[in-house]
Length: 96
Image 1 (cartoon, one colour):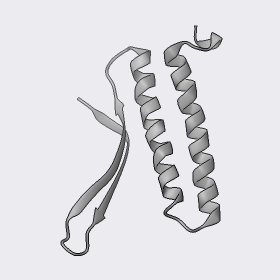
Image 2: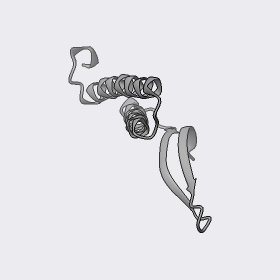
Image 3: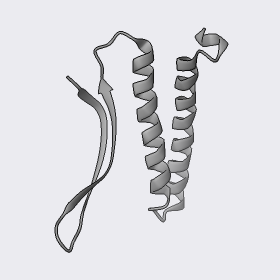
């Protein structure tokens, strides 16, 4: 059973035919496993998805402060993504 901890879902309604189109879904699932690598991968994927979403939104807004906020947030999330990847790979001394 999957419980969604974080879900971001955009639905755009086409005005001509009222068709709804799902554009993006970012999910971090509640997991039953005790394997920390599985949890790390799950969280890393969610963080990467959120960073990607923020980068796309930069092009959609005109407010310079919002653009800066989105870019800064994406960079922070990518830093966390890298830390999770290092944990999974055991590539840093702290994770060995």
